[in-house]
Length: 220
Image 1 (cartoon, helix red, strand yellow):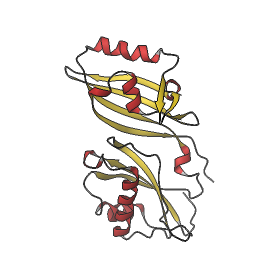
Image 2 (cartoon, one colour):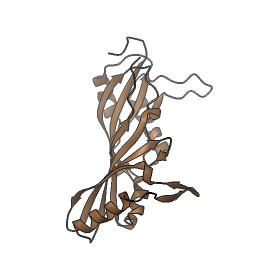
Image 3 (cartoon, one colour):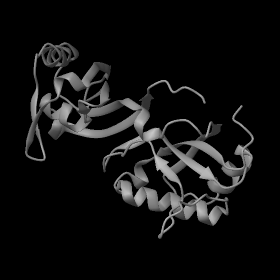
Image 4 (cartoon, one colour):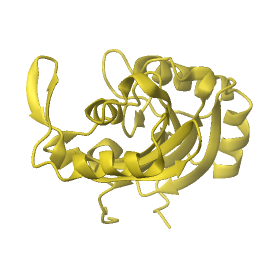
């Protein structure tokens, strides 16, 4: 168990649903600040001229993408049982944002954002191809040595950012693709750009980030 210091760091796992998928990362941060203040939880604030609550989301979620297990750390100025935190905060969350899990973590762990190493996504696309044709399209992309892309006017190689890509389900008019993309020194893989590389960008119905992956962190 974490030490019994006065402050407390809670790791919050939550879902971001269809109702709020078009709000920005900044707006999501503001949403959480409002919900936490209204819940009356004892937030710890930074010691600067314009104090801000110590809330940090693991990784921005692009506008238009939902998330099943998004994560953030919240630092409290005094200890509070996880179940009491969850009960108070859950009552203040808007439709489309739902708590999944709240657990205490060591205050000395590295910042959550620095530990993100990748993410998994599911993308639903409308297709007229049969299963074999779609699997061939995926195999062709994975066989590529390079996938040059442009982001903000600069070229980069998407291929090293793709760890896995597979066909999850195939139905008559819809298919679900699964993908695991890297995040780190080489850059961050984006599901929309992978789908564009597959020539499926115009056929996307929905994209969901299903899971974040983190590097192991030593408890201090």
